[in-house]
Length: 151
Image (cartoon, rainbow, N blue to C red; front, side, top):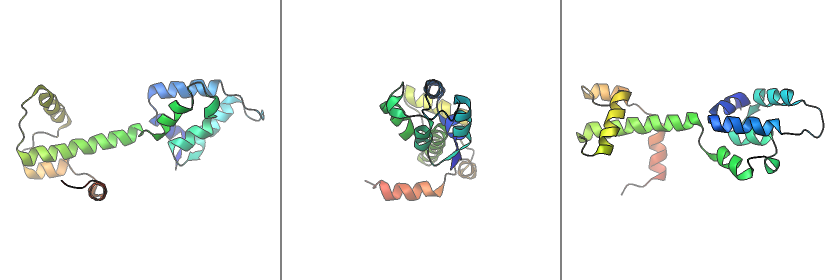
């Protein structure tokens, strides 16, 4: 469970602006909340997921952006999740390159090598350095083994 503020911070800047516009046009039927009190309450409340945060924030079917837009936001990985996956991907790629004695041959590979060098994930002076810098969560290997068959 995370506070609404954390889920809000996981939205892209464009999504944050859209969320603010939705809340600005929100009309509370019972009149118990001003918009400011409502927003403060949503931000402090704990939610299980971005989906729950968004559904508690406003009524999707009456929203400006529409249900489909907010549903796509709710099911997409958060910035944090996406960053974690990209970091894991970079580390696994670095392992593959190390053990495969990789050399770039195309313009795209040159860009990849430049980015990996900037991240400090290529080249390595020895295997110990590579192992230290490319450690990823072992659960990823377990999950991959269960969901992706080897060819």
